[in-house]
Image (cartoon, rainbow, N blue to C red; front, top):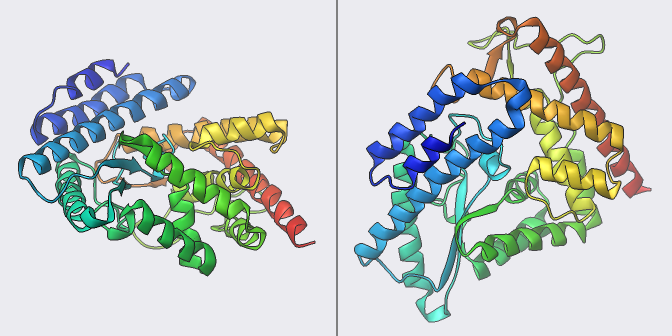
Length: 347
């Protein structure tokens, strides 16, 4: 469906070329979008985004090398997180990425100079193509997300030992890190180490399980969807906060609890079901709910270019409203399932 867009990206040499391909993604999606094709379409959408990111990272690396800035590390990896890390971005996804590298201690200062210069070029280029800056500053231009492996390990230890709300938030973000360009083993090793360290800390794991209970799914006791009551989004629902984030975080937590090494939401759901950590009936419902959330988010993201997550409830057709309500019920069930596991850890 989107193969032509991906092919053009392989030879793109400028921001203009890359921006054209990004805009072409929207036009092609409007032709092919349908719930029955959503899994295949999701793979192709993320394939286009990954091709854009890889091309940008390549061009940023080339420009940094050409400018003779700093010292190129012996090994480095540009990784992605967030929705693209979990392989479920919509059209106008923002930037969530970072860099890990290794080098000899004597060259670390020069390597940081290389990495930070390259990160600045790549981040700016992505913005010009149509990828907004991350509102939470989860980008390689933030020193928190662009570090040597030794500094990353020290930072990770501070989060693991701290256990403050912000520490838990950063741990959840880092659990989605997935290598995209460079030495992939660095990001894979960083994520595996994170999962193993959290799994070995029952108290921290229990606190992270409690974190899964928020935000509350906006569905009342009698099945009434609780839309925004005031402000510019009155009558709308926030698609990510209406159950999608709750499902993604619940599966992330269960994967950590059971040491399932998957990185994407669907991989986690499937592997948890196969291992018996997620009941079969609930697993099927979760898979269907994820498809519904992704379909609606993807469909309405093609209509505007501001990356909005709010959708007016009345703009959904009757079938979409019914499907979304069921998805929200599933999200609440999964939250309760995690809550029972957390209670069991305190007994």
